[in-house]
Image (cartoon, rainbow, N blue to C red; front, side):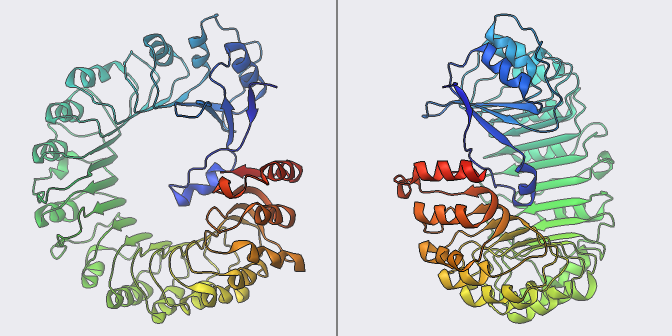
Amino acid sequence: MRPCFPLWSKSNTKNKHLLDSSFDDIAFIIIPYLNQNEIIRFAGVCSSWRRIVISSSESKFSNILYSRKSFKEIPMETKLKNDNQQVLSMFSHFEFSKCHLTLSQFKTIFTSPKLSSLTLSYTNFTLFPSDTLSFLSIHRINLSLDTIEHFVELKNLKKLHLSFTNIDCDCIDFIVNGPLKLESLSIVDNVIPLRGFSIVFNPHVESSLNSLKISIAQSNGEVLGCNIDTIKFPHLRSLEICAILHRSVIDKIFNHGLQLTLLRIWNIGGRYQFDFSHAHQIPSLRLFHYNNTINVDTIQQILNTDIEYVKISYLDTISSLSLSQLLSDQFISLTSLNLFGSPMMTDCGKYIFNLKHLTQLDLSSCKIQPEICKYIFHMKSLTYIDLSSCEIGDEGLKYLSNHNLDNIQTLMLDSNNFTYIGFEYLVRTKFKRRLLYLSLNDNISNNGTIHFDNGNYITVKRLNVRDAGIDYKGVISILQNCVIEELCIRKPHKMFLGLLMIKKLSKKKQVKIIM
């Protein structure tokens, strides 16, 4: 048996809107003792090698290689020295997690002419000069000023993302005011002193940043009230802040010339009410994300009518209704709406229905009235719907049988108290085109799969039934009756007896199993 072979992989659905981009991924599990020649052989015959991911865990399989279609073929005649480290020079994108790298491995990576991005998480870190590295992401590795100062040896570094690295204000000062010419900077940590924020937002010279994220993971209740020298950020287009912001900071962001297209404000803790009363519109703004309650009357004050993406969370019932009506009346260009955690009355559905350009709708955890589905499922423009944890039940799902979703691609229906009755509504529903992703993590059970016996089936590229309450018999029924390319399942302890049957049938049907 070959020591390297295709197997199912763990999926990453953190960013739901980018699910479609992961369909072409092929995962290979590599036994740690795989030698250099075997890696070269696989790389030589696979035209899509792009990224190497090495992660150590309790599993005997520790090295994972991902492939992407966009990378040029590595010729079979590639000759490497007998040193196993040299195989690393075949790749351009690296991710290392929970493992220890040697000095020679780091040197090989940094001196590789193909090196483009490097992501490190829970590892050691040694930096060598590089002329090609443009993206560096470091997570859960403590960094000192001595290490940060050596970033100048990365001649092409444009994007720097640091999360939970315990850097101090001196490190922040070097990153912001030193010789680095970054285009994208992200700093996330448990605690960032007020002085650290002040350094970031008041650089000594004109900033080259077009994207900035600064985030506190744990709040001590301190209200951030530093100045923002907006004149120093002529190129800034994307700003994300996670902190408790004083009104003066909000005023600076909205009223002093920042040409933002994307603004995300995270109110950490949620108890402090942000004051937007003196904020005014940013004409260039197209995406606005705020994760807490807001006075609906200020929406039209701070958002221009050309806004394309709005996310506002945790509105009360009355505010949800008022916002829905306002968006319907004045924000006709809206293409994406997210009202996470906001309970909604039926009339909200009527107003949302009037948003004719809306392509993405996320009402997850909103506890909506089932009748709202009657309006949502008749919106022709929608390509993405997330109704997870909305408690619409079988009653809400029945409206899907008379839908008008001509362009739908992704449908998220997790945790809605469905039963096998609601599942029948779904399997009887026909869509104009094949779905790319359908998620049904609910208590469907094996009883739901009996509807396939009547000639009903689901056509979808990726089907997620990880927590649907089905055992291996239900999985086999899905494999036999559904037209799918990928099937996401969980709870293998319920499927142990039928695991061989699942493997055999999935191979026959050419369905990728993702656990």
